[in-house]
Image (cartoon, rainbow, N blue to C red; front, side, top):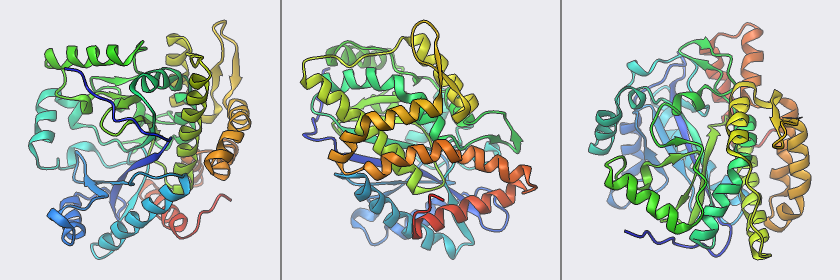
Length: 382
């Protein structure tokens, strides 16, 4: 059955952020999302908040934007909902953080969200789903056709290591330093239909791919194709799913600016009658691993001969190349923040520095919580 692509006329933007609910005193995860969402949703039609949603575990609330034109508009949208969530949490001695994985609370102490969909997911996938206490940021960018969406996914997949390295915020798992910049990436890869997307030649081929998986009983719908980046037919977007959740909104917005600018750049290339270049699959796989392991200290493979370049240099060149597009899209400031992240280090760098200075992981959670609250009040790139 052919799926129609609900084309977007412009590179509109939508952002989804998965928040971890934590005990303010102990730092551990709290499974209170159902009661918090019930309170937040009471005043809304149908008893459902339009921008705060449940996730697989009761320790998570996902906040989402509407359809936005600019990164700044998306930031304001997210901040408004996050402040609502924070207000509801305060009376419960709770708060929230945004990182790829909680530093120490184990998955087996957490409760699943009620619902047939979640239970069916765990029944079918078993342990990989039961321990999926990961938290990410998803960025949707509008695309003008299904054909362009497939070509954009192919081209954008080569840039996913940059998104991953700059967003990495999950060095700890079950109280241990994993040596990774993003352990979330490796935990999530245990799920089926995850990882780098296959290179597809057309929207028709994408439909054939979905039909095969549905007929085989692998998935029920496109919602269960959890690639690092995928077309989203219903929204008319390309959805980038590579990023760890990040502890500040300004970092999240920098990733959104990069996504929006890259998608627009590919659209410009296609309008000129050309096809955006696609890197070799082995290069994409190797660079994803390097980004997950080494973060901003990674040397990325930049051609088929194996030549490498420091990630920070790749970021600097990318920002410079995309700046004219960022100025058109009114996100030049947010795009420039990529260089700030690369130089000062993403969250995994800051977390390790604090722990090396003697901070306990429970205290680290408090620092992460305060970091987001300070940024909600006023972005701080210092």
